[in-house]
Length: 112
Picture 1 (cartoon, rainbow, N blue to C red):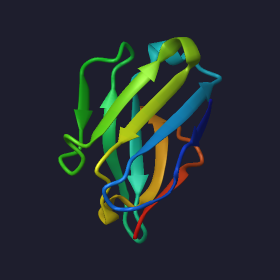
Picture 2 (spheres, rainbow, N blue to C red):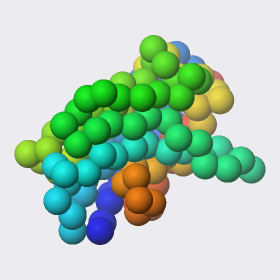
Picture 3 (cartoon, one colour):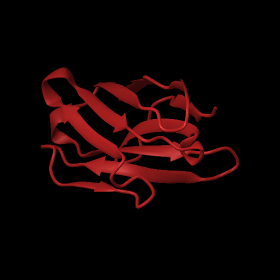
């Protein structure tokens, strides 16, 4: 299983980013997927989860109303649209299967 995230970067508070994760080595369309993040000095936090067919989705309380998880099974790609970003969203973001396989991560830094 290979999961490759992209789309992270430095953004000002209130800004937006869209993360992508391309999956290979698995039948992507059969797997529920999730985004997790790890802030400096903290443990892993589940951010959002999506079923194999894109519904229903669940979100951490800290991101509800600001982040949207989605997927394109034809492109083996998972997305995370992040709006109204806050400094506390600064973390390394990983896409992962529910079984625990995850990518190398992409850094998101929210700072003025």
